[in-house]
Image 1: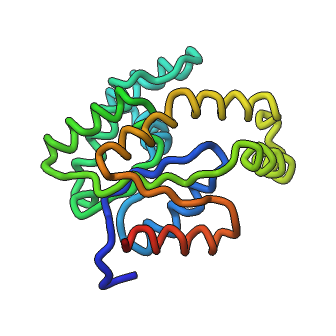
Image 2: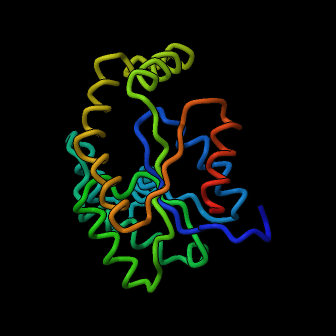
Length: 194
């Protein structure tokens, strides 16, 4: 993909089990941009014992969700680093409309714009089947049908509205996530070149 004019400041969205992690790895390598996962950043901040990491650890240890303030702080620190100046793939943030507004403000402070919101779309029943199969193969006891359906419900309620948010800003690129890894990857490459 080198030498091709392609979108490189990307927000990756999709329900649990849509294949975001697999496609993110391929895409970030092809575009030579960092994969910025808020989950990874939170775990790294906790491990490093940074001030934000200590706050996050206390919240996570109590079983609560990490606040928008903490997630936004970690994301802004990471997006300010040199390797993210030419592009990035954001994964796991924003998850809500409030976080999307915060991301807009943050990118404004960093003097960069989001090129697109890449949404990998998958039928809910297909995702449930995919995640149950993965749970069986990987021995994930926490991935049972009830917890998977709850994660889908939360995604539909909180994160799916971002599709309209970015669609209204003419930043939404939707790609069908059903098919082989290569088929989905090819759809993504074609959509980002458009």
